[in-house]
Image 1 (cartoon, rainbow, N blue to C red):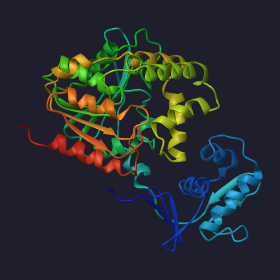
Image 2: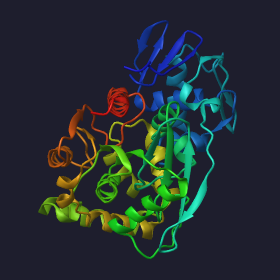
Image 3: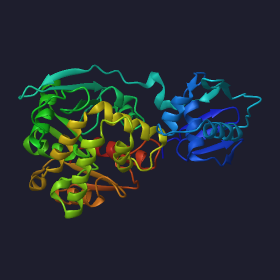
Image 4: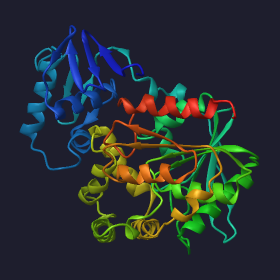
Length: 396
């Protein structure tokens, strides 16, 4: 297990793994919203946090009465040994918001600015003229992350969804990341969205970055793209890691998943660009059902800044038609496949079939319900440990 992320102040601890408030070492029972409120305030020490900001971060922008907000603030103060008269730790700025004035003994290491990897973002062009944004972070053996849906080279290094993965890997490897076409900092106005187009994106990044032989990491729909690339270029890929992936897209699976895919496309076309996050929350609930409010809010916002409503629908439609099942037997690269047992987005069986079809592939089930492995959950250190052990193992 990795060290438990804690925020400490006075005689209190906020445990971000257990979602628990402890005072003088004893757990204090609080509602989830009260815990999320405390975490947001503690992560913004001494800064004025407005009521609107709290409502956006803790309640997801839903309508909240002043009485409800005051009740949660009162509960938060009670949990950490404060009250409305003393205001030793949470201070009210009347008519404006609140300030967390306690002295923090320790903050989350992952959000310290000093730990932000340095990256230089560059662009390359594909054969069909699409500009692809890519970057390098860290140093050491090269690990290329295949582009997948909803990424952003800048925001991902700060996001509580991705930061633990990229910052952790960049300590010991040169990680090459890119935003696939129609995503993030790459061109959004593109003609073709298809498996072949996404493979060309990867080929263009490899050539532009001057990488010769490298390890390749595919996540979610990046897995079939990685498989197609590894089959085309077996001399370039040293080792292949696939997480949360599939060989056949949802539009080509059973009747139930085909119907779910069609329903998702309808929701995306009609609700993706709205200010109200209710439509995007559907996808967030599938990707990170055990996520914190902060992680949910980040993913809801990330959906809007990484892809347009039109491109989101086009992307989903294209990925739904992926089928690399005939290529699995052609993979000659040593392969590690990992999949969350309770994955609500891509069924566990898809990952199992992926591993079964690739000659010699090792399969690692992970205890999680999240499609994206989150910082602090038990599956996170297991994921990183398995990935590192596989990549560092001597060639056989």
